[in-house]
Image (cartoon, rainbow, N blue to C red; front, side, top):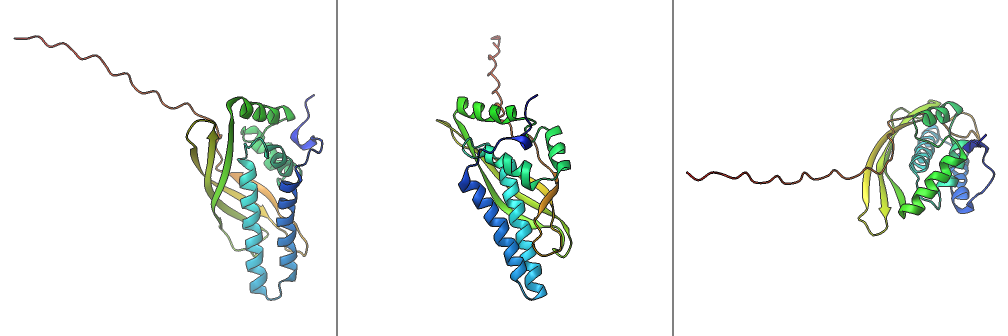
Length: 201
């Protein structure tokens, strides 16, 4: 039976992994070190929005240099089991290791990569709650060798849970608004019709 992405053997790309973990660790430390209630609330909101930004970039990652590590972080640390199963049913995430291999193979054959740019991450509720929906917007820039870049906008809701206790880590408990990031063929232009001959009177 093929391995699921959650059971993948460790093949870490340490710069990406350390950067992701450092972001969470520093944010959690910052939360603990804040003194005033206002400062703690502001830092908590920043932590959740930064985490949602990071998750959005990984969800849309099709860069052959980083996609495997993005999937590892999502499956092992950032997404709840229910979210993983939901996104797999919706074909937003690979079901098995073969799904990741397919992404890598297609990128190599088509000479493609992508870059995910997040422009806004806005909390839709106050950060004094454990669960906060965050609206994340941006664009996925697909790069194909020898062709112009193609930009696809996205606007998704990521629901983040961060328990109100010291040292707690955030986790995604729902994602809505994603659509398959597929390379669509450009619409074919209509062939110009032949001019009708007009009879001379």
